[in-house]
Amino acid sequence: MPDTTALRIAHLLVGLPVEILGRTRSGRVMRRPTPPRVYDPKGGRPPKHGGEFVLGDPATWGEERAVTVTDTRLYGQATARAWDRLHPRLTRRAAWLDHVGPLPIIEGTVIRLSVEHLPSDGVNKPVWLWWSRTGATEADVDRCWQAFLRRFDIEHTFRMLKQTLGWTRPRLRDSAAAGRWTWLIITAHTELRLARPLATDLRRPWEKPAPPYKLTPARVRREFRNLRTTTGSPAGAPKATRPGPGRPPGSKNRRPAPRHDVGRVLVGSEPHQRPGEHDSPRDLDPDLPARAPHHSGITGVRGTSDGTLNNKLTASPTRAPMADRVAREHGR
Image 1 (cartoon, rainbow, N blue to C red):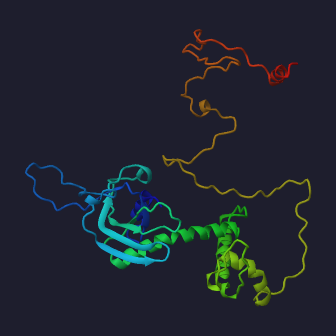
Image 2: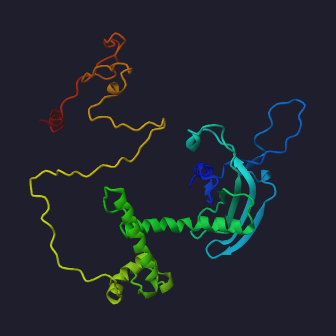
């Protein structure tokens, strides 16, 4: 998630056993803790923020809180460096636009992850992470960046739930039905995971062979129809039935489906009102100035304050209809 969103969520969930981890851009400028207050003969307000920590300038980093080096299979040697008690200087924009009161100081841990190489031979750039906790140990730093890399697997899982299992395929009108359908999809995904040791790899011609313990849920689903015939089921045998007659043809639906408001709210905390089909901007706001009348074939015509047309503008000949234009092109 963006760094501003992560900071906002961390502020809203303060006091709860929740940790927020997000990626921050490499051009971000963090601030150190406020230095101890020292008497200043000149007076004035004490500083609210400490020195700058520029992510793109190594001269401002200083000493790390923790450093870890891990050998990985895909990225080679991964080095993670962490700095403690850093916070950004917030502004009243984006997620903090409607914040009431002074902007808070949200301290956290900044982690810089660098690897030897990428699997795709792409541009190798370091990754900067922000963690909502302070006082991180080496084990915490390793857990954070490894959990961040797992988010790519989570994104592929959501894609599999949508494309393979049809999570978003039905057009449900009730929020309770959508929740039940989501739990059914989660149950089906769990069954595919549990059936992995029993499935045979039915791979496509372009796919590489995979051992049974590494089969993806999509591959297990191809073999699931064969597993279903050999495994038992607590449910009884289905009974023969026929569909109901339904509503007679030509009759009106006297029980329309209820509409559920999505709860769209504007920036000013006002509910959104969709304008009518033939509503003009002047109908919605009577204070708008009158619009000049439309004249066919006149380009650049503007209305004056007294409602007359500007005589200094020139009028162009009216465009010919499409049929006349086609006839001239064909010499008719």
